[in-house]
Length: 368
Image 1: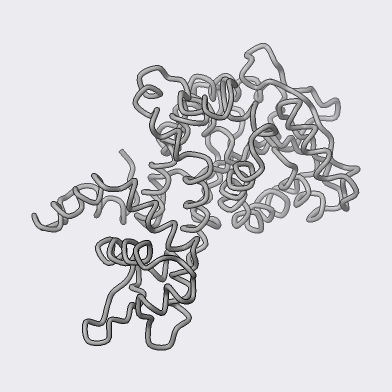
Image 2: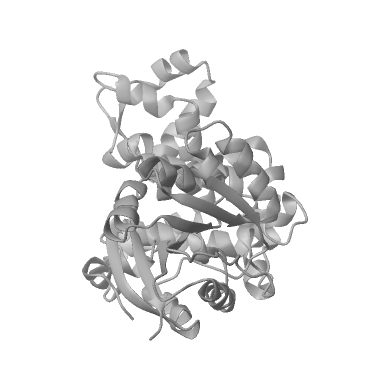
């Protein structure tokens, strides 16, 4: 197994004392309420109030500022002490933030993940075991009867959509500036298929970055409709086209481009499929390629992360795919992705690492 140096240090030897390990085990046991109590401390603005105070706040001051009962505030503060997001001065009874509390309040990644887990995943996690056994997203049923979350995206409640797209876009958007340079400056791409292009965010970046870029988005028909509504009236929209396709259907072929195709872009896309489905998609992509075409696969490969916290978030995200998204995909590592690429008759030309929030771009060509 390939592991980055930081992950090898963390994942190959024991690092906790017995007491620390016991506490961490209890943190796991109480994880659902740890999450909810911390989320409410954020939602009710208590962490903000403590953060903005000069010398911390007493419980009475927090009750006065928020309007919540002494009972509710006392329960939350005592839980938060045990969780480790606040500390108390026993002489003044004033509460202050810990470093963990500061990150909970100020770290954008953490806030995005909290919203994603609360609005999209929380109820679905209860069906994780069934999902793992059945290979189906059993936790999705409380939203609707779709086979995967992607067919239902346009029908999900607005807050759920907001948190889902907020999670999806946050992780990809930070990588776009570097990715644009790789695609358009290093390889001089003009014609590009954006596979699983979603709302057209990457396509708009492409036509804005390169005035000759012509992008065709391949996605489900309902997603194409959302994309066309999103790009309507925006600069370069006339160079963005939609092609409705069910990429899970092995008989659905990529469109053939008469003058050849420079690039096929797949950003945070292949992790939405099982390895067999990935091979099928890549084989169909290959049929639309020439020897000059390159496939750009941008993924957050968990084994290539510089920081262990990122790998933690990614391996947990795999279980979202299990319980909510489709029941059979995950955040893959390098070994998994390479296996799929080679089975499809392609080969890796180059891997660009550490883009944005920990993305890698795997550049593939037809195997010689």
